[in-house]
Length: 192
Image (cartoon, rainbow, N blue to C red; front, side):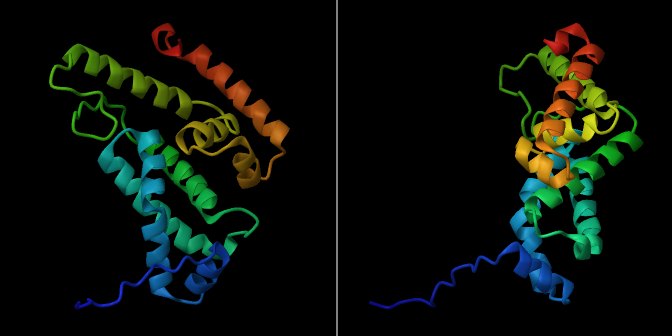
């Protein structure tokens, strides 16, 4: 029975090994990091921005910023959590620079589109998502960062505490207060 070339299994390197390799100039190591974390970074950016092209731009800028700041990575937390925090901040910066628009792209990820979709519902859903993004973007720090990391970055409260260097109780308080401010700033139809 003929056998093909041996299948190479990917080697899983630790975050510390990856950071050391990248900071030592190993371009393949950085490509490994991008390949490993690109989808997660893109998802964080998309959840904040709601636009495929904007999320792609923010994700790319996230990796540029991460590459430049990799020497500052503290190995006490995960590299993925560190990248989520950079992605969140980059997406929020980008959201603050753009003009508000409502995107109705039924082919984009997460779009509530079916063959029988009601255009009015699509418009309302897109407008509500934009209202939420705008309200979250308008939260003062540290509430905005905590809410975004929790709901857009999908970090646990413990991961947020670790990533931000804040005590867990403080993170819980910031989240509770941030959500209360969101409820007060959103239209009644969206806040419920």
